[in-house]
Length: 99
Image (tube, rainbow, N blue to C red; front, side, top):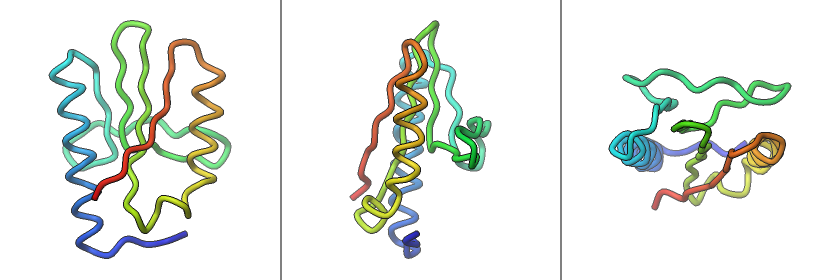
């Protein structure tokens, strides 16, 4: 699995925070894999944790943020989240790329 350099990790974390704050403004209950946020629940048998999980009523959004360095190396994680979302009503999974 590819590792992010410090600059890319900062860009990743800034994008996660931006997405989490957007959902909060829209009235969602937000969990994010960042300091200062409640941690999202692990998904799948290997316990993959998404970057953002947002819920509002019956609607649920799972977002994974990648950098160009990790976009192709995290496919197993993406597949886990995609399958999970497909099995749950009103659940959507998206990938965002931090640049």
